[in-house]
Amino acid sequence: MPAKRRWNWLLWAGFMLTLVAFASYIVVFVNFPITRNFPWVNLLLFAGAAALLIVGWRRASKQPELYRGKIAGPVLAVVSALIFGLFIVQIFVLGRQLPVSAAAPQVGSKAPDFTLQDSTSKPVSLSDLLNSPVSGSQPKGVLLVFYRGYW
Amino acid sequence: MRGIEKHLSEFQARGIRVAAISVDPPEVSRNLATKRGYTYTILSDPKAEVIRRYDLVHAGAGEGGQDIARPAEFLLDSRGIVRWVNLTEDFWVRATPEQLLEAAKQIQ
Image 1 (cartoon, rainbow over the protein chains, first blue to last red):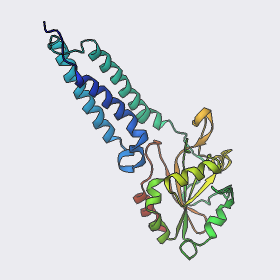
Image 2 (cartoon, chains in turn red, purple; image 1 turned 90 degrees about the horizontal axis):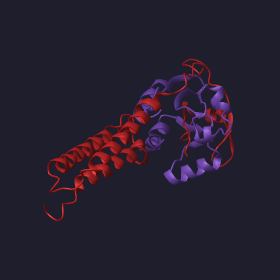
Image 3 (cartoon, chains in turn red, purple; image 1 turned 180 degrees about the vertical axis):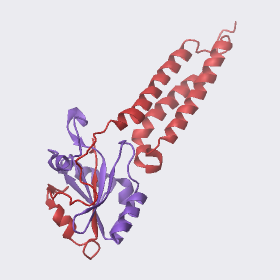
Image 4 (cartoon, one colour; image 1 turned 30 degrees about the vertical axis):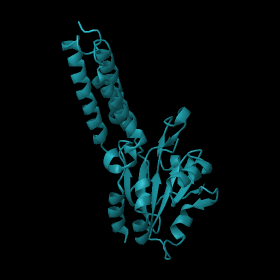
């Protein structure tokens, strides 16, 4: 048996790629509609990570005299699978837990008026939004975007 | 929100004013606007009163169990009548700027 077995970098690269695949959705890809509405980039990254882990684990178990990772292989693979599961739950399950909003204003109804502070703490009402000029003329409409907030 | 900023001149060219609403206090909105370069109106509804009036409360979904708004977009005409609504069924999925601009064509 050789004195020193080689470092099984594929396993660690696969694990690192799993972490990148998980974190990059929130950090990067959620900002762009094309990668947010369906997380295809992240799923591809997870697939790449799985390939690295599988190849790394296989060579660790088939050629244990050459490659390390007989224990690290299964451990990293299981942890990576759990991270992937967490991602799937977050995106495809928790994302759909939304209230019904049955009483939200519908097409044809008048939007309820309001007065709220803008980012400079100045009060702004819906009538202000509907009446103050947009590019020099009376606005044709208002787009209200409700969002979850930035934390 | 980034997508809307990117297409803001197109909304303005169509006479559409854009306003975003969340429970964030004004200073948080100010930081967000500065950091990301948002120039449209950002309104604060810290007690979720208007969000509740619009039936858009997502109870306990915020940090520390705070009530926040579920994502939703409304396009109103100049009289304040709702002409187009998007209540997403998945909070990762929002209306794209292209969809919003397409909806804006209706009220030209």
